[in-house]
Structures are given as structure tokens and as C-alpha cells.
Image 1: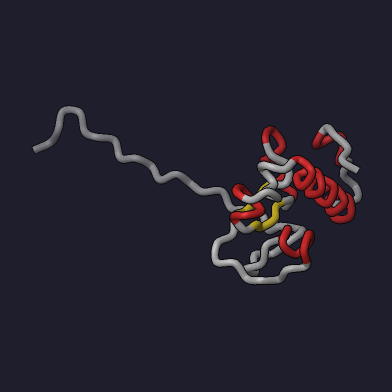
Image 2: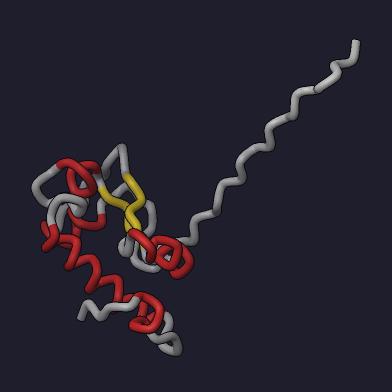
Length: 117
């Protein structure tokens, strides 16, 4: 029996492929644990953090400006990048320096609209 108005089959949402980070590879370590404390412990759970968020998130993705962070440094601890402006600023500076080394022919300021150095 055919339906008069057949159901449409939902298309699967295509996931974007994340470009590999130019700063940090996903090896179980937290970028900020290493940078701030020299702690190379392996973490079970890591979150990918785009260094430049908001309207620049897609640019962060396109140029590989992301790091892997433990939960404490990403969302919940006192040094969490989403709760601590100083730590976020450190990552912005590191991200800009890495961008300028990796893409010397591309002007950071014209793309991201701010100089963090």
C-alpha cells in the first residue's frame, strides 16, 4: 500500500573534517597542562578548543588553530580558558605567533581583525 504523502527520508548530516592543529596533536596530553605547568600526564578525556572563537571560529578551523585541553583547562577549573581571560589571552598570542610562522604570506590582522602580540 503506497502512501499518498510518503515520508521524506532525512539526509545524514555531514560532519566537517577538522583540520589538523598546527600547535598540538591529539596524543592524550593537555596543551595548557604542558604550557603552564610542564605536566605531561595523559588524560582520558580531551576537548578540542578553537583558539579564536565566535565569528573567527571557522578561520581557526581552516588554519588549524586549535588545541586539545583537559576538562579542567577547558571549562571547569580556575585556569579554564572559557573562565579565565588571562589564559585565553595567552592562547591568542601563541595562536597568532604560530599562524605567522606557518602562513608568512597571509596577514593575520586582515583575517582576524585584531593583533594579540
